[in-house]
Length: 588
Image (tube, rainbow, N blue to C red; front, side, top):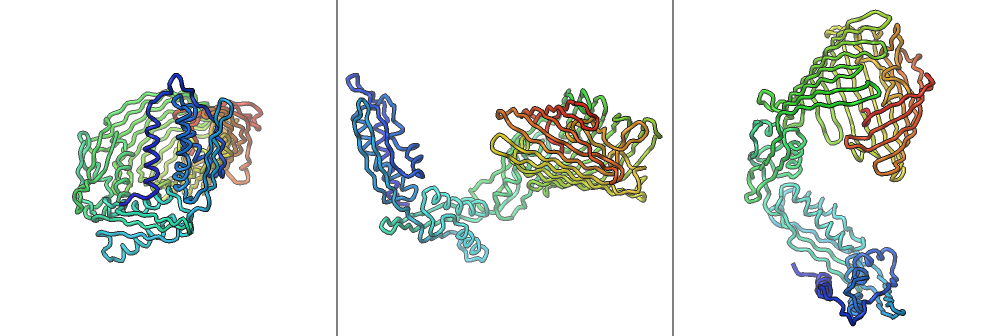
């Protein structure tokens, strides 16, 4: 490929400036030359000159004497022409003058860029095996040409020219032709007509197909674990997206500290897929303590085994103890399969004592989850056995076999510290007396959080929830399927789950829920902020009794390593008293 005139000019300027950059100090008899620059140029090109022109770069250097300054002034017009050419201006008018102003010099630069050259024609060709005359590749070439970003009539910029070539090449590299390259590219500029003709030729190289897996680095876990996560079928055409998808699945799994997936381009047919892995340890024991204004002090004991029964099954068991809730849970998660489904089994025993209602329950279930881009889908079945004791009322024993479906969408700019976007979740459960349940019901529950920025330091956060249980009554329905609210992340100003249906001397769950919250945050520093908020909502057993109560207040915000930390002082309008709330993260 022949070098362009622009490339030669930039090279000659760089060669001359290299000599200037060598450490030649002004002698003791020579005075360091200081100077000001008066630059007259349209504002669109001013920053380009100020960032790259050597008169700016060397200003204030102790190596600068009058002779060297004169040399820079002589070189400035050629430098300016080279820089303007990258922006599409090939016929500028430039004057450079040097005047003495007392002990300093004044450099006057006047630049008229002129009219930019514009693209007239584009000739994009692909040679090599790609050019086999097939309908598929003809369609791909037409798409490459239609996707070409530097269209006829557009002002020619060097960066846009390079970007257009890269994008055209990328379309081959990503799909079937990983050794494609640019063999020739020319921008033929005609300064008299302010036009440029673009020519680019790409060589596709051979088409590649995938072969078998070649796995290295496995010691603790079986090869079937990697094979289950592999979306690639031997013999299918090469796709970089599938390689990256495979690598992402391995890296996102808890089994590996690092995962690299690649191919060797030495042979194109059924090229082996190389998988290099660094394993995580299979056993992990954790002990934690915490504090919540909802449930008080908390202690947590957690055990994880990533290779249960030497099958790469993930066994997790957790013991959590706090003032109002004690939980012992265990789950077995199976490795994701090639389609990305994640299956699991779970069991849980729990005792709660909240607002005069004491429950003891056993839950067993199975779930299948699938994540696609920003959405997560999950469905499964749970079996509940619950004993409920209500202060001042009768006790009850409820059981339910409930299939469920859940959908979650996370479309935010940052999952840990979102400043714009939204989070959505919807879950539905169903139960029938004919299927081991004490009551027929259909339950729906939806939650949403919306983040809207106002400049770099302010944001509005809106949160809403709606829930309904369609049933003859709440009798026979386990408390997990009914609704209570109030607390740190629902209606602040009220105790945890203290809003609901009054039964005896206790507050129990109802069949209807509605709440909304608005919060405005101002960040004083990148990590610390203050907020004001108003919350409203309630839970009830009939729509007519669903009357909202309100809480409002202010608080502090801190972007902690584990997520947003919230410390709020809220006034509950119904109870007419202040309450302190502490929470981490967002409730979704």
